[in-house]
Image 1 (cartoon, rainbow over the protein chains, first blue to last red):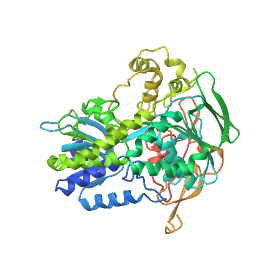
Image 2: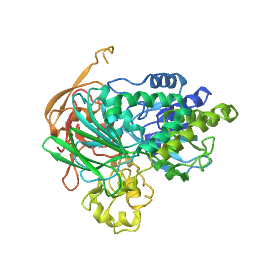
Image 3: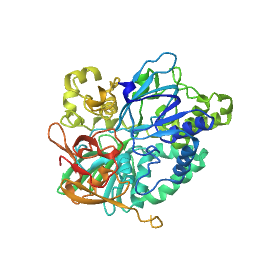
Image 4: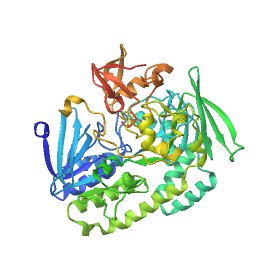
Length: 424
Length: 90
């Protein structure tokens, strides 16, 4: 199978073509190594530097041009489906693309698999017109027209404000941005970013644009459809004495922070730390020959991703001695990541929004009421099929973790649905 | 947006209706750009509930549709092509 569909031997295989992966690939390729970058999206850039009909960010354009000059090969629309032990090196990686299955043997693997949104179930969250906050941002960058649409945003984290800013810029009316973190926590967080002037200016700019509709200590209770409108019920105030407010809109975008994508890392046998891939200061995971960089090691933004990617690229090229100044910069951004974690801790009430008939697993339509009696993810999976649909628990896993305290187990190959004809 | 060159658009068919979309638009965005409230209804869940895109980045599979006869295509990771035929469950 592998021989027929192509086996590629390379120095460095970078998995993920966002900022961390691009920085790692450029750095390693510029040092003279053969580098291959695979990404499951149709264009490189990851979520933050997503191109599309509206064009991309200037930083993205510069890095993508550098990647093109670096000599690294970019393989788009290519999805990792399995990992296989290999003599004398890190595991081989099997991928699927339109052309079929490929097998990659690399001396060094750099995991730059990024992050995804955490979704929490509440009544009505599966209705059409309810979308991820980052999800809506991605769809707008893909060409979704939001001119004149009334949009409510809720959840937690700096992403909500970035989404609001983009929507306003593209002609939507943002009715409210509900941040679940309370004002006190946010003020403490804002005080701490004084050490990061660029982030502070970004926050001030967004605050000017979004300030009037920003509600802190506010979270969604439920959503319902009334004719063509989506009606969002927001709650604020202390537990047991919440004030409720119904807001009609066209779209409701929500996201409850970001979750590192660690499925491939776990399949490779890498240990995790605080939800991300465990790495040392040089990006080394617990598996020999496997490095990790960017959001998949802990969510801290694009600057952290770029510096970690550059360090991983140097390490892959055997130039670890040149990483000195980058290590100091990395420390700064890892502190910033820790600050984000502290500032946007989830309110416990968010774990109790789902009613017994609220779907938790969207692939298999498993409601919260069928899950509460189980003791573990494994048991619930066997009894209810939660996490056994095409997304393999990528959406309901983090939700179940918040709701029930379960740790979802590994995904199984193929990690993503693959046509049977390609697996012959 | 104004200083950018006018971009080429492509024609495709969604549920039997010809639509025009800017080059580089994803099939998911083209589906959602249709008129009316039902535009966000892209597929039916295993128990028949109406669903629409959630993650926009190829994770959730809620934007699946049939494209040129191929079923279960994640439309948020697929750019539009001229002459494409898309069928939703909507």
